Image: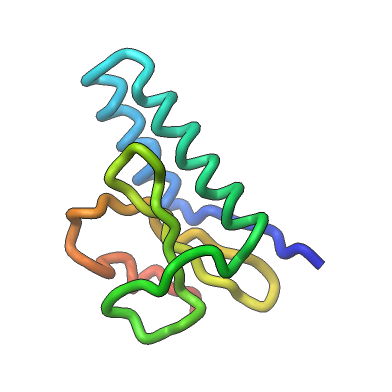
Length: 104
């Protein structure tokens, strides 16, 4: 059975902010970024284990998939009832800043 995938409000806000930033720098680039994030999410949905372990995080269920063409990655965790996207994180942000978003 395929688990539903949910994107956290924080991850959605990060993605929207990046789209705005890219769009301000070049018309259409925000849409290209969003398409690549969607493609990364689709790869996760196809194979939950496609992502690599997240440096600095001990939980093996937390993984990340890189967004092609952009310095971002999608961080997600497999839970019993769903796959939760925790962050759409820039590669140069402080590592694991999103750990406080883990569901209890």
